[in-house]
Length: 360
Image (cartoon, rainbow, N blue to C red; front, side, top):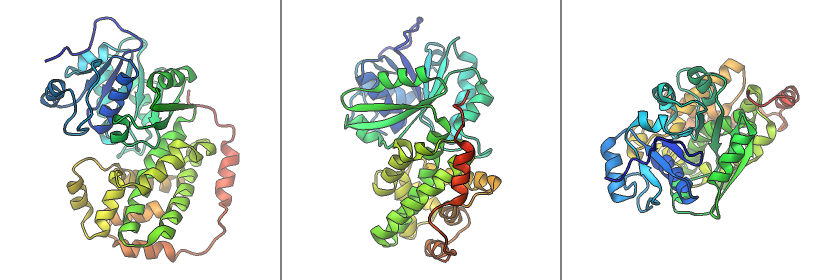
């Protein structure tokens, strides 16, 4: 088996990635392709050994060969202590667990980034809030999000995404290290907006899949996307996000991608539910985590706490967790009282959050 890729010294161009699923592997390939030494950790030592032998992730990203500077590394303690920069790419329900596991091993000056999308299931907290609780408020942090499918990133197809951080220099440095002829990263200081967009779009993609699966057509799909974007922006503004973020890659971009392409697991879940499968049967058929099933609960919880109307997300929750029939959910949306398209309450929220500062 090849070397673990973890050295006793720390090279600031090195990066450790936690999560050897499709997305973690794709980002590991991209960082390595851009010339950086990458250690890729996953839960299964056997899977990592197979990946190192085959030089690809045949389970989650088949056909994409690893660059020589990408090293599967099974020792979490060694990986966490051997790098300044760590990128977490696990599902939202495992996010806190991974943070707690790496915390005792972090070196001084460590910086944490994540590509995890979604609120924490039990608490409704955004990822940056979980990081603060587990690792404290002083550590530099960043979130990566945007309209990206792992298979296309792994294949080297042209892609763009957003990196938001609490320190502009950290976002800019990650953007430079990740970018290349096939990949372009933009920077932002709106971590809340980027995180909210990544969570809510998964719920809305399930709605789009249900709609298309029921044969409701392009008119319905674009109405869902447009009104869904309003719901996403409404929630983000209430939490302190910058409105412009939701017109960008991590907002509208990720939403349109997930609602319109069958590579989206969330959209496929909706299609299967419309075809008559239960949510549990559909998730089992997909065989990977479908983040929207968790996000639907969290979004409903947070929206209720804030007193916000999010009718599309509400109906997705009804279908997933309250046995609502898909057609009845659509009828419930169509039967809502008529109102102006301009959201007066949202405009008030924008005015109130116009001076919001970046996360400290």
